[in-house]
Image (cartoon, rainbow, N blue to C red; front, side):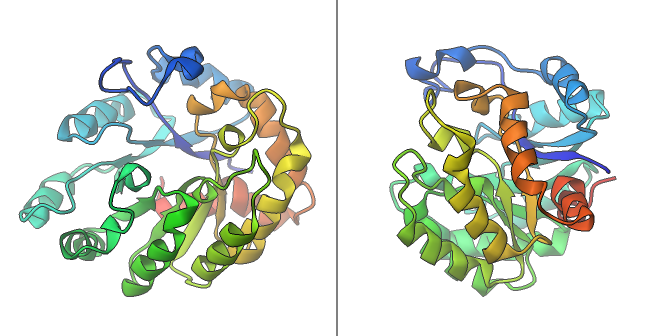
Length: 277
């Protein structure tokens, strides 16, 4: 069974540029590079990964594509591009030549304008992605799910994937509104969902595997086993769990799936969505 980690990061830590990594997250206030992840993936039987942007700069693409060129286990890169730029098509044309560059992400969860994704300039950028074969990762909080459904609905031929099941408040077991909105999003068949980044939304020190069951139940019901993929969110996950502990909780949950459904979750869905080789 091919196993792909569909969501992880590398960075050279900079206190200003990475100010979101606060003192509470001191354990990840350092550099994380491919040589750090390679043995972790090997120990846990993961065959490859998709590397996702952290910084919102053109330099980020160069940095991550260099990492991908140097290490075969990095199967794809989700970069960043200024979707609101007037020359978005020119930018995409230049980036198209990178075989491992699969798509883009914008850190919508941090935007003051919660509905930025529905602004004309942003929509224009999204409208160009399919022509160049690029995917789009949706990084949002639950309050933005309704906007995401509208975005995805406007572009039925554009492949989207929701990161981190939209970061529900697992710590306080808040679920009702998130569940309603994520089921609405899941009705749109051009959007996938990453079962990733969940441990950081729980109580970092006191979480138990059963805390995640209601949320995973909803995600699998909303999207179906053909559109949910595994992601670790390493190294961010380290604030709440080791890689193997985080992996264990997902393994236990998915053990009830059929063999075929497990193959889709662990690698098949990510391979198809990102056109991995």
